[in-house]
Amino acid sequence: MGLRRRLIDSMFQLLQRLAGKLMPNGRPGKNPFFTNPFFMVFLGASVAFVVSALAYLVSSYAIQKGAPGSASRLLGEWLDAWGPVLLSVEFALMVVAAITAMVTDDLFSASTGSGESAPQ
Image (cartoon, rainbow, N blue to C red; front, side, top):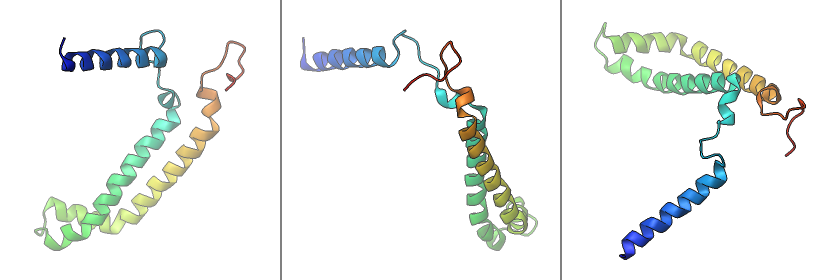
């Protein structure tokens, strides 16, 4: 057997052992991050905040270089007028969602049969 084949086989066996440790039943485990819906709200608000911040950053360029009446110039002018308000609302939503996610984390985390949190 060639060296390359032995390396591939040993890496495959290592991955199987790691997968057995991470997922003892052979199936992918449920991701605990997605069990709390407020984490998803936080994730969505964060993505919207980043996209809005980048759009607000480029809006001045679109106003200067865009043709009059073009969609990019109109969007740039709207962001120039309403961008700070939009970013403030998205930031406030991020803060509220993050705090709510942290406060309700125990409600959505895995628990034992007695209703108490699992010991760590």
